[in-house]
Image (cartoon, rainbow, N blue to C red; front, side, top):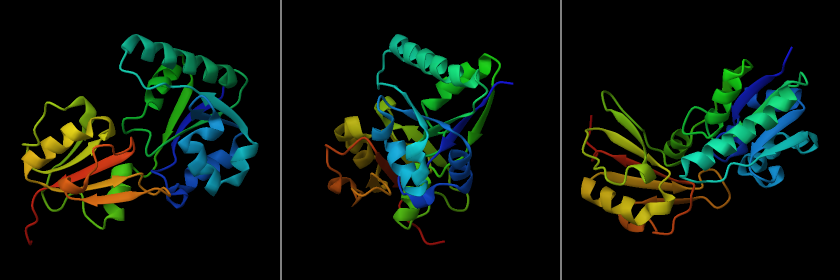
Length: 231
């Protein structure tokens, strides 16, 4: 029998937010895949090793996934990643692929899983705490109440959009085009909170569009809410 591929979320940054299931899978399996050219330098490894120190002694498999908008290059990278993982599965070894946050939310891992599943292997997704849930908790705010809608938007891909649908918004992948994102936020009239590097040592919280720096980092998440009204 072939091995199983697990896509396991390690949460947003704080190792205490890793799930017990992800911790158990790391401990029970030898082969751990990590998204980056050097496994020990990946953010996922640096988070997980704090909760599971024995991770450092596992068979670590680096899976390079360079950031690009070139579809052909993306396909080549995902094909290569699937080939690397398939070799271990054929040896009847399970592979635990660690990914930030939750693997079902804008995760590059999903492209690899689709390829592996299409080749007939068993795959499983293991939930992790999402960055936007962690950011909301960190700032002591709700994402949605009563009958409010919640919209999750990959901001860098939707810079031509206005936040004009009623409800609250989570803007992900905002860092590279923050000056344009800030213009959209300012025009929306919504109450804005941004958490940069949520749960990490270099975490920063910004309240209001005017506080957000144009050079915010890649791991910057924005919550934009309807102006508060008392229930």
